[in-house]
Figure (cartoon, helix red, strand yellow):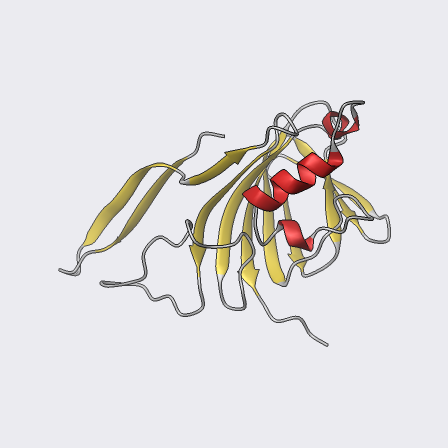
Amino acid sequence: MKIRRVVAGTGADGKARFLSDGAAPRSVEFTTVPGFAAALLWATESTDTVGAGAAGDRTGEAGFVPAGGGTRLMMVRFPPDAVMMRADFDAAAFGAEFGRLVPGLAETFEPDHPGMHSTDSIDYDIVLEGEITLELDDGAQVLLRQHDVAVQSGNRHAWRNLGDKPATMLFVLLGARRAG
């Protein structure tokens, strides 16, 4: 997934500057699931500041799920679910690749319930292209189309692409503390 990322900030002189303009540094294409791709576009931690001398690019060191007060901006392209239902699909190889390429997020998935996961975050989920189904743990589902937005609050869920075309989503995760 080729994504251009432009980053602006404040220089030591207090003036706005373009700090970088190029390919997103943590963009991955999965080999075990053709068409599945993810990119971590930006990461902040609760201690980050803005302005001259602010924290720089943390995407290279960050996991894909933020701690309390942190944020993550990521884009994911989901191929149709049929890609994972093919006869030669190797679930173990996919699990290993997922853990290596998407650390922090991979650990939130439940092995006994494919796709189901929850994170300690408030998530703003925006469909950029295609259609995708949001499934909750009780089996309730809602179909989301281009430009639809879902907001989730640490709930257990799965994304299902029941169609025949890829779906691309933008996710903003705001790290939070889990109640209880």
